[in-house]
Image 1: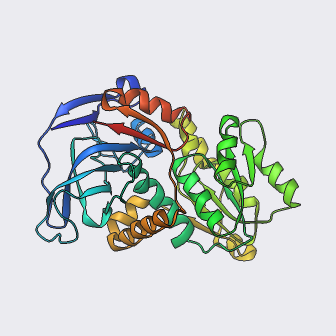
Image 2: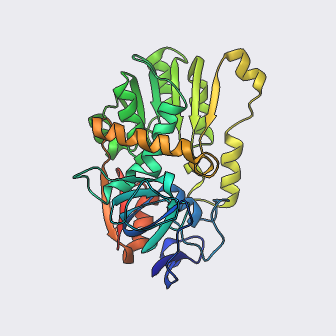
Length: 337
């Protein structure tokens, strides 16, 4: 089978090469999927830049989510059948014509749902669901800040928060403000030309946020934390601000988070929650399955409605990475074989 390998860190135009490798065989609790489409996630860009410690060493096959049909089942798998149309989380290995993954990371695609777009339901929607439903308990009238609100995770967070009656502040670039407003953001903020911290603080009259969801990291995290009221919660699931510079910049992003003491959290009655979906999939597969089932329930209820940013053919993998990295996309970037 063909698989796209990351062979060089850095510029996407020199990063990838298609190689022939054997079709993987499923373990006893695994599923083999014939991949029609796979999704791109910002973590792929981080891995391509050599900044993702969890990524396998080069030459590596990246990829966290795929969609296609079940080709074979492990000996202990009874939940699915060969031929089922599915979407799935993959722990790398998704940039290939066939991929294996744990059965807990596989879900049937809803009837009539676009196969390519269903890749948004695995990594991105599951991340958003875990952050906004499993990790916290939002209520009607809560004030919520969501960074990168036009992205795959961010837009899903917006939809979940609005379904719970929250007042949503969302950051995005100027060209995406109309979109995030259309999906429910009450106060769209252009993060490039406006200081989101000052805008929200002035509008609320002080630190009055109940929740902040951050995938940017660094100084953005620190400022978002300062906007929380007592009992507020910071949910953190990425550090996109490290992209676009050297490893020295990445160290600067780490420093930008600031130092936090448990005593500081206690005295302010604030909390922090960090989310890494790979860790959940590795160590709590049954929890991941519950999260995926919850996502599918929300899809059927019409709460989660992912947006397709653009489809690329696999020959355009470098262009697709560039498109995602330069933040041109609104919604899910999908690759087709």
